[in-house]
Length: 157
Image 1 (cartoon, one colour):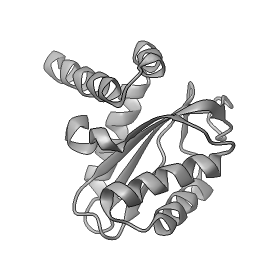
Image 2: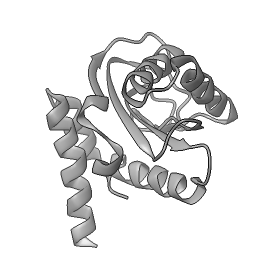
Image 3: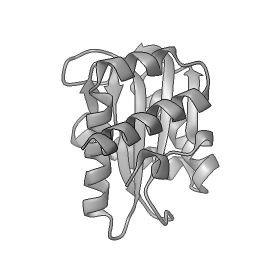
């Protein structure tokens, strides 16, 4: 599965204001509701429940919140860049400004879900890519960075 298969340009949001982790997750839930035909409250509940099991803050200002949801036919992603970082209980205790949320179908998505999480995690561990994502001005630029980097890594392997 490629990042381009997960992430549509209309599921990328920049310059988002959120004062807390919960507000950041609520923004993601609204984007999921609008783009995937889901109920925002259900998405927020699923994301919050997952965070209670352990923070999805990966470090270096990055988080990968994720959940399994009824009503999805395939894996989907949302990318959000916050105007100001928020505390996220990350492994390095640094606040988060880059969030790549993943949503999997409730049924039969275990391995695919884990592979997608691993792919996003590996991708966002790259310091130069994180900096480019922070500097990008448009959703198209973000999409291109994520998809091109993924394609470059795949062809190099």
